[in-house]
Image (cartoon, rainbow, N blue to C red):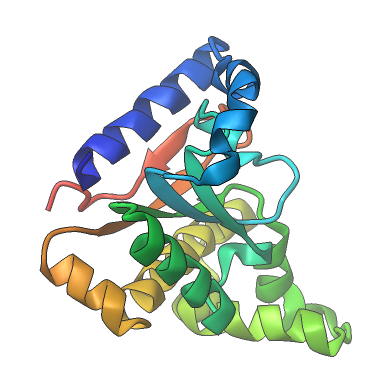
Length: 203
């Protein structure tokens, strides 16, 4: 399976989810014993920890299909890069998707941090400081609604994470250069259940 075949599989799975026509996760439960000796995920998803975005369900995939890394705000730090790199190198996954989502709490916290005067713990501050550079231009915007500002920040943060992944690992840079790996951004709508992949996935 190449990168675009993997992407098509995710798109079709999400279309089933939006229609309510899902079942791969539950039907794959019978395959648990087969997977004890190994795994071969066809895609890696770096997503947010938000409980409303269960990745296997959103893409209607079963056990062993996706290698998932979840962290608040779908940020990229060395541990996330290492996890993604591991899946790409060990299992040959040809596709990595950074999956953001609407109404992201980590994004809202970053946008509002300077305005609300609240003090965050060092651990939460780490997440905010990882997000802040990627959405700095959006944070300056005052000519749009709060909802539009958040939506733009979600997209900017996803794109920043995509760039961090593309250039945070020599191994993954080589896979991309060789045409063996595609890293793309996407956004999940809490309202519709649809995943929108960012432009440029056909380049």
